[in-house]
Length: 335
Image (cartoon, rainbow, N blue to C red):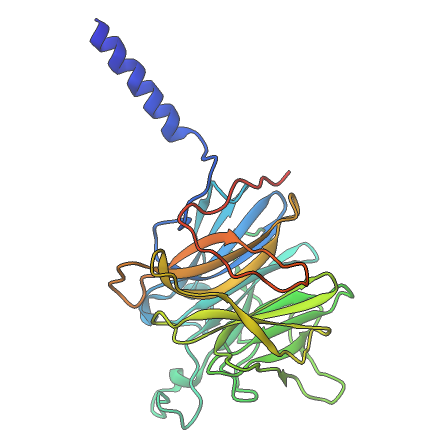
């Protein structure tokens, strides 16, 4: 009888612990292979929108994650798939989501668009040169999302930038900026208020190139204390040289001069840390960096996981090097 009661109590305690919300985070936030995470706050939940880290032909959908506190995460599966986008067939990358006039807009890249004459360009395959950056829209942050335009928003190379890895940023005056670019080039453009196109600059150009030294891909923009922080990934995305650098400017269009490295490999934690996003919590005011990294040991090119750690600043506004952790961050509940 005594043993039976002891077993029953132990079982009840174990069940309670398994069901109880976590009070401290962990890295990664999910055991699945996810990369290029974009973070946002909508209502009373944090949201992360990542790339599904897999072979290009298997990258045909996006999942999302939401949390009330950066600790307890819920997966929302297949919020957008290639079946929802008539022109998308593979390599769906780096989603970012913003709210605009009560709707939620998911920007993404698809198809790994190739430049005519480039080494991967296939003149006999028309799908090889169809793709770029698209936009989908939904009534809720978890979707379901539907194609806004029926075609890519950006489907050509401007200033030699491959149309991938977009970041959408709204300045204090309401202007929407779009930063994007792979293959070592980065552009900035101004979005129309309804996201149906690009508003030309005063000189008539759709995009201005703003590539800083060392830039490879993954642009990020945020504003703090009146300064514009532009961040990017450099090095090789398939290995441990991948890392994040940044610049600070007085304008959202630069010029951007490299200040230093923020995030890089730590052989005690993980390698290949990069392609990130940044968020200031509206609850605590704390800053966070959401990024992907490669577990140690790493057995596959696409074995990347999504993590959250603190982002901290020096008194002069420069960014302190990020310390990657397995513990993650403390609960920061939205109310």
